[in-house]
Amino acid sequence: MTKARPDASEPLLIKRYASRRLYNTETSDYVTLEDIAGFIRTGREVKIVDLKSGDDLTRQYLLQIIAEHESRGDTILPIAVLTDLVRSYTTQAGSVVPDFLTMSFEMLKQGQSKMVENMTAMNPMAKMPGFEAMRAQQEAFMKAMTGGLGKQWSGPGQDAEADEGDTRSAAQELDEIKRQLADLQSKLSKM
Image 1: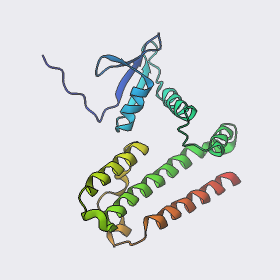
Image 2: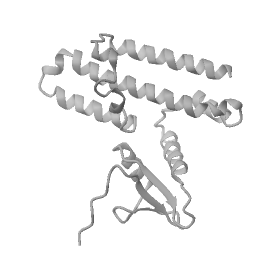
Image 3: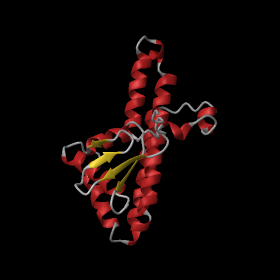
Image 4: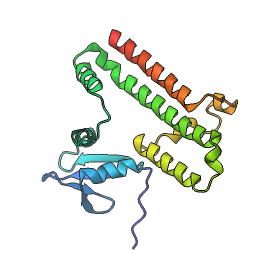
């Protein structure tokens, strides 16, 4: 009897044993935090549960992956952002922080997706041999940086400005995103 191919739309179930070893239920082998980070970079959702209690440990392990990357010098989160996050746990502003972060990351993903599209559409180099491979590499990088969600925000018919021939440059769009983030951060700091 052959084993059915796992459904990639379902989260990959990782079980943590009492020994703290992590077990991939699809491949029946032990994995490391770096392996889990690799699954996530390829766009796969993961769910990590304690074998004995059934507790969902996903958040704890995702934070640990981020902490390890930050401690190795792969810094993405500025000190000011980390400080504000710590403060948000003890202030009334803590209730708006998750929504603010979600909205900020969505704006970032939209901006990155538009930037890739604009590079392809407006770049005269697009007809040069090898350009498509370079563009695919950039898309893969963007996908890895945004957890694979960069393309979902600008599907066909969803972006009226792009459909109407929006000619703003990627730099102008990035400046607009930065301005919007600064406005949101200002509003948050006033709360």
